Length: 272
Image (cartoon, rainbow, N blue to C red; front, side, top):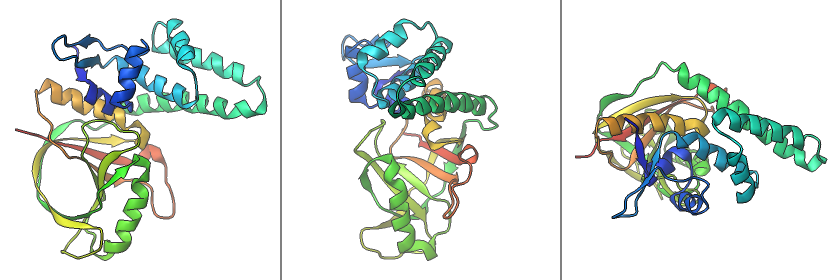
């Protein structure tokens, strides 16, 4: 049985906002597998995930909608898409020096996709159900880009560093991927209550949740979200917000480390 994602879930897995997905539907670039006639809700099959990621990266490189439509019109499957990108790479290498940035970006796409697939196929981690105990946390809730989390963690660490007693985590309050105005809360577990301006110190409630450890780069987290959301769908589980990510192993203070070895635990609380 195929797994169908709601437009919000598909947004989270693909990294495309709901607004952008609707636009690509209108332009017939990324067409839902079904649309509920009564509600107008769109649903996407898991087979569309790879196509969505390629569309996103091509748009980041300023490919026009017309150019993207042409790429997919000439491709029958994912292998054809990668071959098409390789051909485009060869063309770009013959252009003037300003286009070399685009060539490198294409190389990164291909390498990143192959590496992510290799890690996913060889992963030793599986989705599991677990109980989380309540914990005392200090957090700063913000709205912005996901890439801005690092600066918030730094600010938080300076304020409560001596009291930290666990791995950093982030709470996500949106049920979808958002490009500019994501609602999130970087947090640290702490051993005692403290007062600091602009920082929320409170007990984070315990929960029964689905858990999956993602190994690899942060920009490949969508693949692991696809696995855990598929599991949730198969179990007919309802997900409660906020969801959590715990950064078990990531970049250090002085050395970035190898992103292939980063470990991030995705935690999806179960609703009633």
